Amino acid sequence: MDNPRPEKVAVVEEVQARLDRADAVMLTEYRGLSVAQITDLRRQLRAAGAEYKVYKNTLVRFAARNLELDIEDMLTGPTALAFVGEGLDGSAADPVAVAKVLRTFSRDVPALVVKGGVLGRTPIDADGARALADMPTRDQLLARLAGGFAAPMTKFAGLLQALPRNFAYGLSALVAQKSGSDA
Image (cartoon, rainbow, N blue to C red; front, side):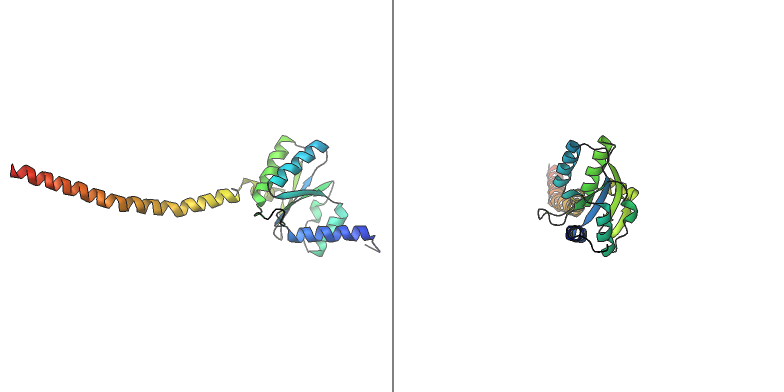
């Protein structure tokens, strides 16, 4: 940009800072969505830990180049960015949950097109975003992990419980056998 206006420089710096802080960024094309639909999408994404913003592609392109992110091919047409995590409310960010929200919303409103995004510093295409939406969420993975840890302990507790019970049954059978042979 030759002699850019200060407002544009400020926007590029803002986008660059947000791209740098975010755990992931999903890029979408919102052409054909009504204001009510975009508002609904923003609300759903906020609940999933993301913020949905529209910036000029040229300014996003400059910010991405400064960070050496290869997303230029996704910056065509009207593009909105869903910034995942970047400390919105202090909770852990879950790019999978955001990808699921975008997939579900695009099924209901086909005008929304998920172009791809950036996961950490790695660009992902639309297929990568779909694959991300197919993964279990962070909470589901943590529940599986906890279940994996709990299962052996549960089996071990059952084994420890069975030993005295089986000993008592055996002892009872032995006593019954001895008392039967005495008669």
